[in-house]
Amino acid sequence: MNNFAEYETMFIVDSSLAEVEVKETVEKFKKLIEVNGELKDVSEWGKRRLAYPIKHKIEGFYYILTFLAPPNFPTELERIFRITDPVMRSLTIRKGK
Image (cartoon, rainbow, N blue to C red):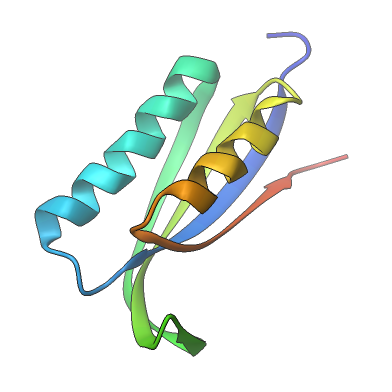
């Protein structure tokens, strides 16, 4: 865990999905983080209006995950966000230094 850094990722899940599909999507990313690092916090902001339409949608479910992981993991996490259909947008940043 010495080379782990703290990261925060925010992602928006399509609000037109069934509640169970939204939960499955969030669980998928929580498990992915737990396998590759340490999940510290999950913040569910709920359904919110988007600043601008994404894929002709104006609302989405917002989630923020804070975690510790090795430096190469966020790149892979972002790749998986991009190829996961229910995820409309995502952003991962390194916290601290």
